Image (cartoon, rainbow, N blue to C red; front, side, top):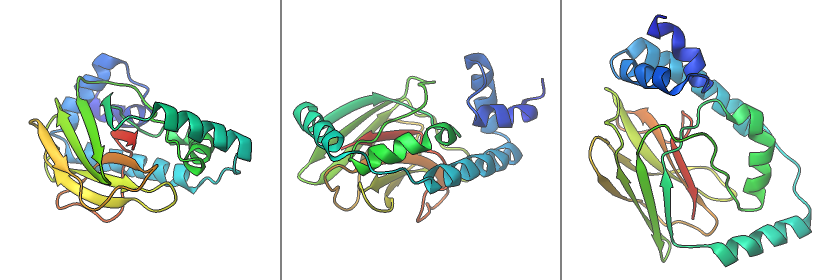
Amino acid sequence: MDLHDLTAAYALDALDPDEAEAYERHLGQCEECREQLAELSGTATALAFATVAPAPPARLRESILAAAAAERTNVVPLLRRRWVARGLAVAAAAAACIVVGVIVSLGKSTQTTAYSLVVRNGHATLNISGLSAAPSGKTYEAWVIPASGKAQPAGLFAGGAPATVHLTGTVPPHATVAVTVERAGGVQHPTTEPIYSAPT
């Protein structure tokens, strides 16, 4: 099959691992496919975040926050997670989790990329290893997303080598740290699905 024909399936996370790996190699060399994938991912993201879910019962909120406080750690090691167009199927559940301050990471690990998030006194450092270099004309951008608020840009990095990103600004309690692929120079608002997300 022509790799150009796999863009929609890749956006829907419908490729098997071998096909996904071949398509990702192709994506690094094909501007047309990158643009098409960005359009598909951007549309899915807009639809997912436009969904509003009802607030959960007060007792559920209290029990989840109590459990999160009991198990919370300041060092959160996670494998890379790829979010592509999965938000449509889980938008309501994700919105409800945001209301109670708990963010659920979706997707599956496709590479051996490792992330380690360290938060101390409202300041966060993100350590990344095994992440391939950003495609030509693109960059990786880190975000701090308050529990009730808009994503704030928090730093840029190129990938391709182990990196330590000291996130700009302070990280409020129950916020989420995420990473997306954006155009070179960065943007003020995320335009693609996060490749990594973790609660603080």
